[in-house]
Image (cartoon, rainbow, N blue to C red; front, side, top):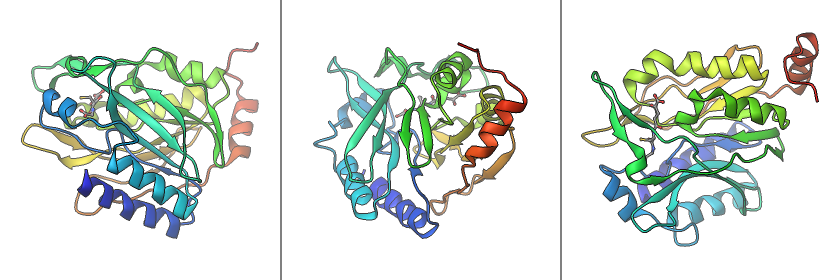
Length: 255
Ligand SMILES: O=C(O)CNC(=O)[C@H](CS)NC(=O)CCC(=O)C(=O)O
């Protein structure tokens, strides 16, 4: 966690240097453990988490809002929550989303993971919220495969869909970019997908390729899969482009 905080501080510095108005970090940025038990053993409340408190301090000091995935204690002591926090430019946590779809898969060529063994699933989507870069909608990783969440968030008025992730390598190679582009195209929204990259432990490697996609489906940035130094991608969120695309090809349910 201490190491991850120092990596995130590098990203904060890069974002400030780039003149970013917000920083989007991956799912589970606090840690990825070697097992479900270890994930639960390490879990801390945001008040007790050096990682979260450190990021709040960074956000405040740099006046930079930060969207970040972390673990929080579950209702039951043998489970954690997989959540996203929005830390505003004053360093306060103002929004929270709990992952709705848990990654329970058994794929012969890998991966085999049962997230529900150690994570409690969320019960509701978080309505899009206003930020300096537009109305942001939060979903996490495996949620990406369930387009109805993205469509619901679109109908609730999002400009930007976010998918902080730690995708596996085989599924990432096969599906990551096409899923992100599909969600951007069908919701006519920007997609910001910060992704973990590289080896976490002997069992887990993440695919990387953090991406920003525009509402026409164009990949504006792809960070790739190098894992030597934490890297950011930047893009300008063009709200005129969002309006133009939605006006020229109306797709959203009219209410
Ligand atoms: O384990 C943690 O602490 C953090 N959580 C994750 O890494 C989660 C659950 S194992 N990963 C995914 O949802 C990958 C989805 C994916 O790869 C796909 O949909 O193909």
